[in-house]
Image (cartoon, rainbow, N blue to C red):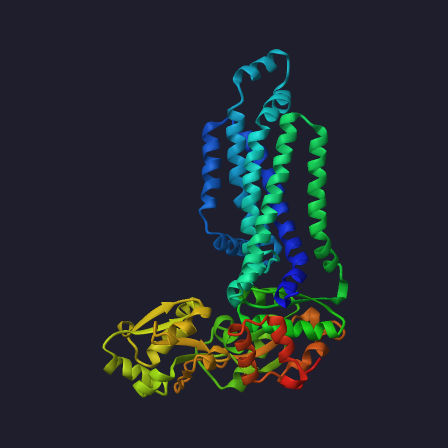
Length: 513
């Protein structure tokens, strides 16, 4: 079997289980909220309009923004809960609107007839109105089920486990098989839940108790089967080890490398891939993940809010003290390579323009280029203080440069094809050598050092054998090896798991675990 496909199938139980748990619990909670609310407001037109308008307003909030808002309101909680509440809010509108419409659509003559037979208001509701409205209400539940399954794929950046892990990983690594696999699995799950709800709808219309029982049994089997693996992993006790990584190739490779060592030491690694950078640190602080690879420059600028730059050793020492003091985590040390920001141009452009440093490029732009310098970078870079400091330090006016935001997977090709003049590259990226790019010297030291460091949560550091399992990685991965590892994933399309084994092999690095 193809190794890439084998890895996808290996992760399926965990990702599918997390997706089912998240989407089904949010859907059931939405029904529990929307149905009573719909009954309460259906006889009060003005109140119903307010309720529907509020639910509709929630639908207009972008999914990722709502997830971030839920994290904020929950005090920085990550993983399941912010995603659960976001899905709950998204699922309210279709159930609520269908409930209101269905109850308003019940024939008034039938209600009057029921009252004429001496039924109380409660009896009329349960014996007449809700049974007649049930098919329409279940139509709203079907819509909410499909929406919940689709939106649950966005839980990955906030530390949730879902089929979205396939999609985010595939997008970051340009692995179209992973992306399509995640999309297909989510689609199959959405269809399955939709058909189960439809089965309930048919059972109500036919007044078939056996059909309703069959639908309940099928739903229980689906949920129980999907949750078996995540629950068994959760109760893995002290052997369970959660490894976090951000959404780019280098982090995926390193997460597999850490998992290799932990597995050899008897732990059961669980990779949380594609998490946001700040989310990883929150998770580490809370003990929701056990280990991660961070970069000193990110901690220095984003967490410590430092705007100055100092040498690598000083940066490492101050970052280590900050991590241990503010986050209660343990810094085991640097892995041995740096992934700093660097301005890169093609060899041809460097030769033609005679530029060797960023200062040379700035001078060339001001005096000879006669148009704005088109510089490509990750979208987030242009919102960081380094961008403003770069322009101020090298005296680049706003009209001298044209910032082109793009995905990091595309910018190396863009500069080599002449679509942009320069890019803000990452120094450990394998495509630098593959595309024959030149890194310009940052003589003013605008960018702080970005050494890769291995962080372990306080609780994980206390577990017997955990730190000892990971310590061989410290100082063991050199710059050229990490570049080559990244190149194998980016250019040769090898899987991160395969490249991680190469990176740790005795032949590559004398590191075999």
